[in-house]
Length: 78
Image 1: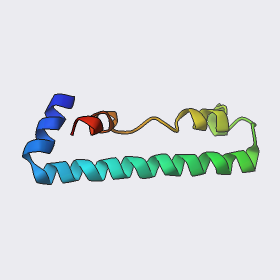
Image 2: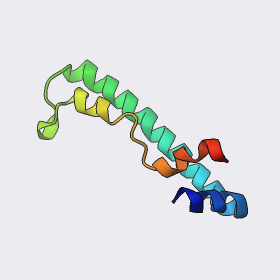
Image 3: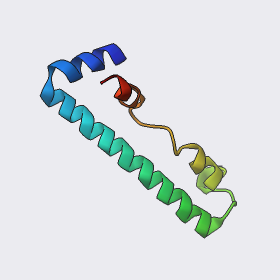
Image 4: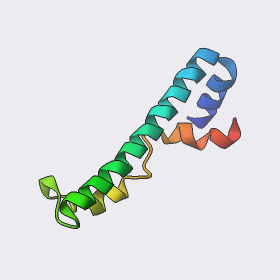
């Protein structure tokens, strides 16, 4: 997959711009997740969350899970 993405970045400016917007969206979601964790910590502390999740602990575990990991992994190879 990464090889295909690198080829797209190098050969198709329009599609590479779309990919860059996806990275921007992903970064924004990660920032939102962080703010959400902090809000949950202030609101319920370490109590269980809705649906029986572990609450803030579960949310913290999602902070560094990108939606588009392949787009992030090729950053150093561009």
